[in-house]
Length: 316
Image (cartoon, rainbow, N blue to C red; front, side):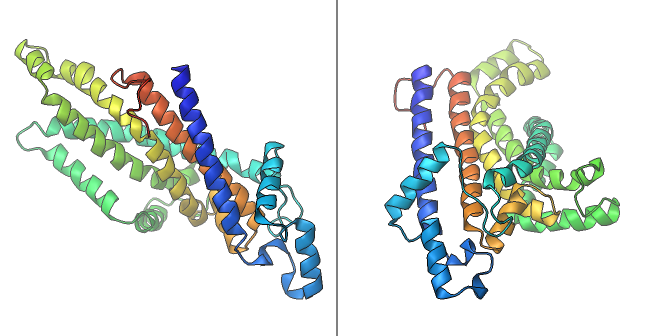
C-alpha cells in the first residue's frame, strides 16, 4: 500500500509540475499591463525598467526556475493590481476558509441527498409503477442537461423572490448560505444519484442477490447490507469529479452572490489582469483537483480488494 501511494503521489506531483509550468509560460504571453498599477501613465522607459526589475525580460527557463525556487520557499510573489505590493499568500489566506466552508457544505449536502435519492431510484426501478425512479430520472436529466449557469440564476431569482432570502451573501447570516450551497450541491446530487442507482441496479441482478432472495432474506436487508455496500465502492471513484465540479461551480456562484472567497477573487484577478495573483490561484485550484484525484485512487484501493496494488491496473 505504501508503495502504491508513493507512486500515485509522485505521479500527482509530476502532473502538478507540468500544469503549473505550462500556466506560468502561458501567462507570460498575457499583456504586460497586469504587472503595473498605472500602466497607461507610464513611459516606455519606465515600463522596460519595471519589467527588468520583475525579471519578465529574462529567458523563460530562468523565470520558471526562479518561480519554483520561490514556491519552495512559500513565496508566490506580490499582487500588482488587486492589492499593490501585498503578498499573494496573505490575500489568499483571507479567502480560503470561506470557500472551503461553502465547498465542504455543498459536498456534504450532495452526499446526504444524492445517496438516498439513488437508493430510492434503484428500489423504485423494481416496482410496478416506478414512480420514484421516473421522477428521480427527470431530476437528473434536467440538472445534467441544463447549463449550470442557467439553474444558478433560476435558483437565485426564485429563491430570493419566493423564499425571501438575501441575494447578497453575508458570512454572519446563516440564511444567506442556503442558495449558494444549494446551487453548488445540485450537480453533485444528480451525479451521485445517477451512478448509485446504476450500480445498485447492476448489483441487484447478480447471482448472490438472487440467492439471498431465494433464501427468504428481507429485501431491506439485502438492499442495505449487500447491494448498497457493494454499489458504494465504485462510487468512490467519482469523488474527484465531484470536487472538481464544486470548484468549477464556485467560480460562478461566488461572483453571483458576491461571496468574498477564492472563486470571486480569481474572476476579479482575471478582470483586472493581476497576473501574479491569477498564477497563484491557478496553482491552488490545480493542487486541489490533483489532490482529489489522488484521494480517489487511494480510497478505491482501500475499499475495493479487487484492485491490484502491484500491477498497472485500475490507476488513472
